[in-house]
Length: 309
Image (cartoon, rainbow, N blue to C red; front, side, top):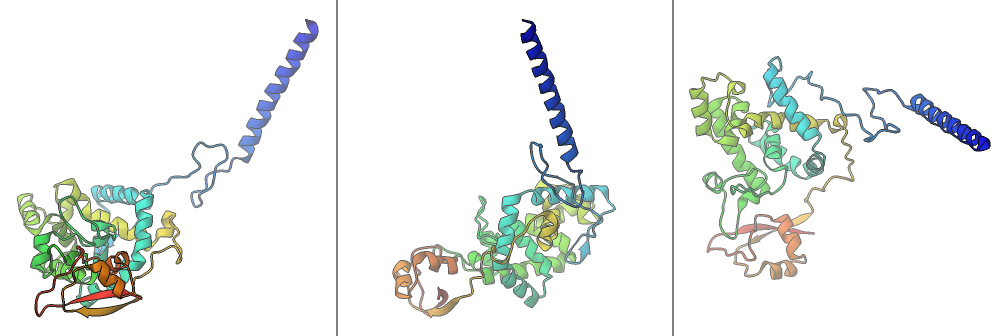
């Protein structure tokens, strides 16, 4: 029994010493938190360093500043910056898509005399995707059908030019400039694009708001301009938010095609694609405004269709 107790004592002492050694080794090797560098921490449950976003600014939209001395403005922008900075999948997709969409959008905005910051409105609306909302808004610019038609877009069962990037962007420019002539401030224009000009006018007058940031309305519009500014901030400097997307990671520009003018109805777009040396899927990718399997064309009318090379 004496020998047994002695063995147990030695074993216990050994275990205590071993645990002390491990704790000292862990404390000696655990690095201090460097605020300028993200490190992988040994022995932590979740190897990450999460920090607040730098709000020192300045922040602006289309050259018009956000009043960052207002605590409410700071907190609302902070919320949208955090929401999008840590929305990894969505933010990565936008970074990949911008190479495909931004050159065309920026060119048309410049030609139409609209600040290029308005491209971030399209980012906020659709994530640079030919999306369709539950309410029926469609395309990168998320036009509702009546608004799209009023700005010259063809929308029917076979053709929906809300999905035509160039034409939809031209229509968006006209729409935005109409609002700017009324409101004279691109921040108000963004709010009007989100909730409609009549609603903006109603709430501005009812609440006697001198600027957009004094409005207290629905959460979606209250956050809208801040979301646009947050997306602009992240997409213009993604590396500072921990996003690294190389030139080989982005989605390529769809600029390798030929354009043919079609003046006669196409009964089957699949057959048409095969004759043109492509397939139905690629035809739809290059011409997303073709929303049916056929294309009826009335006398005297025509369409330009892109055929991938």
